[in-house]
Length: 287
Image (cartoon, rainbow, N blue to C red; front, top):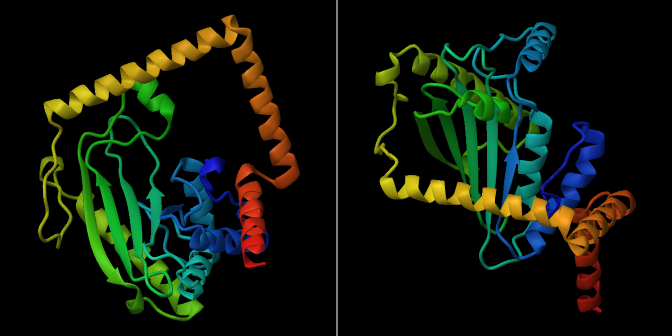
C-alpha cells in the first residue's frame, strides 16, 4: 500500500493536515489518475466503535445511530477544499474518493447491514467536477474479518448499490456548511438503511433508484475466480518452498525487509521517499 502512495493517518488532524497537503499536491502533479478511500467514521462498526460512537453522541447531544457511526468531518472538509484549490496540471485526470461506513456483526444468524458512500470526483481546472454518492446494503451478511470467511465461510450473496451523481458546485463552499452536508448525508443513509432492512430479505431494494440493473454471477466468472484462487495458492506455495530451500531467495527476502525498514525509519515510508525524489526531479527540470 505504501508503494502505491496510500495515505496513512494518525487520526490527529494537527499531524495529518501537513501529510494530506503534501500527498494531495503530489497526486495532482504526478500525471496519473488515482483513488482515495476514506472512512469518515474512522473505523468499521464493531462493538467497540459502536460504544464509542454512542458516548460521542451523548456528549454532543446527538442521536445514536443503529446502522452507521457518526462521521468525522474535519478530514473530509479539508480534502475537498484542498482539491477544489489544486489546479489540474495534467490533460486527463480523475479523482476517486470512497467513503465507507461498516456495521458490526451481531450474530451469524441475524441480519447484517452495511452502509457505504462512494464519492467519484472527475477532473476540472480545480480538479473536481462531480461527486458520486453510493450507498451499499448487504442483504444477507457481511465479513467482519478474514477469520469469518476462513473459519465460518461467511460471504455476502446479495449486495445492493444506490448511486447518485452530484455536481461539486452543489456542495457547500464554506467549511462549516460542508461539514453539515456530510452529517446530513449520514442521517439520510441511516434512514435509508433502516427502511431497506425493514423489508423482507427477498424483496429488499433501495427506494428511488431509477434505471437499476441486476448483475449475477455467470459460469465464466465462477471459473475465473477458481482459477485465480488456484494460481495464488500455487504461487504462495512456490515462494514458501523457495524461501526455505533456495538460499538466494532467503537472502533476497531478508535484504528487501531491511531496505523497507531503513526507508520507513529514515523517510517515514517509501511513499514519502518517492514524493521527495519526485519534487527534487521537478526542481531540476525547472532549473
